[in-house]
Length: 120
Image 1 (tube, rainbow, N blue to C red):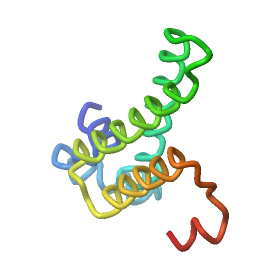
Image 2 (cartoon, rainbow, N blue to C red; image 1 turned 120 degrees about the vertical axis):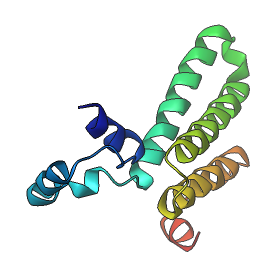
Image 3 (cartoon, rainbow, N blue to C red; image 1 turned 45 degrees about the horizontal axis):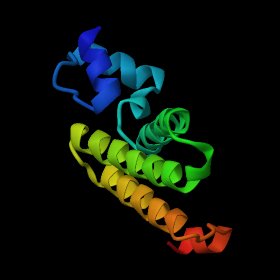
């Protein structure tokens, strides 16, 4: 069970046996083991929400801008940390870079419109 959890959490497939790989391939769940942008953005979102909740509870309401800055920083930190733990493959590194770009845009007051986001 530990090898399967490691594979699911950080894409460490070294502990999986051939029989486990056959089960994963037969059931069509191999995509769950690969780290993708979804996992990176979930980590970033978790960091953002947790930091915003903690900072909002500690700081006064008049400092909303500081709370948002801290939350975006936590999101970037969580995305980069998870990417590093997962081995910094191309898909996860690309997702981490896009989280940082989204944070920079949000902190500079830019709105993410459909075509602009696609072009970025």
